[in-house]
View 1 (tube, helix red, strand yellow):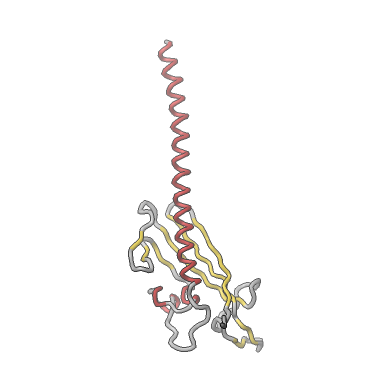
View 2: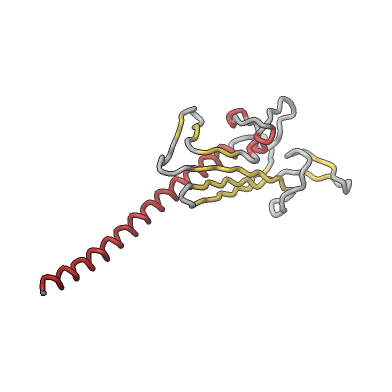
Length: 172
């Protein structure tokens, strides 16, 4: 009888300890997933922000919305608006990168033009960095854009990075 009671007590202790270990393992996986999400979002945000703000005066190449799926040919930040890709990703060096084969990652970019930093998104029409005339016949200069990169994991976790960019001329 004493050995039966000892067995029951021991099995309850093992179940309690294993539950703690499973929870700890899940938290470690979530931390790893979160690290990958942030890394993927940061890398793409830096790539977007490295492009010129204004549309080139001539020779402008189509971006994502113009059915150009090759982000290496994008020549301004607006070209990234709507850009979407899924792991495995292609690095700027042209290598295939799969950060964690256990999960599938999707990245989506949004670039919304603004008239001022605190504005909501500007109405469609007009090009970034150019003065346009709207239906109200007032000139609007679109010198700001809110860029967002959202990365979602097949685990259900996601992260969104936002950056306000502006059109500026630097003279030396």
